[in-house]
Amino acid sequence: MKWQKQLLSKLKQRDGKKIALAIDTSTNQTNTLLIQNIVKLFGEVTPNALLVQADFKIRSITPIKEDKITYYTHGKSSYTEVLEWAEKEKIDTLFYITDVTGYFYDELQVNNEVFWLVPDEFVPKVPFGKAIRVA
Image (cartoon, rainbow, N blue to C red; front, side, top):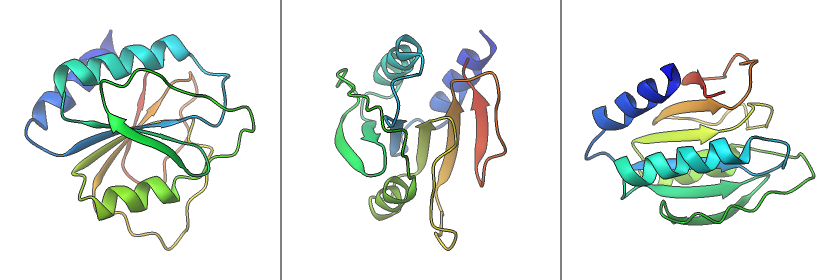
């Protein structure tokens, strides 16, 4: 329950901010029920948030109430397009559900707040922002 309380606290602290939840859909070997529950939490606490589904490119951007998530099996993920989109759309805080094995351009400038929600026992070092283990 520790990560749930931490995530809920972070969402409540950002009330009134522009928030997006991105999901790395590059693999279907993840806890899909866990991800659905996180999406549901975001929908209840931050109903104006956006849901971004992406692998090596953005697949969809919908209101957070969207609950149909499509996973792929190629395992290729890149965070560049989502991070650039968040910057362009002036997203204050981006929450990204991923195993943090994707790519991004080294020269990419990230000025918004990023939380990496890692649905795994092992949490790798994140390039910027803060990692939260949600497993």
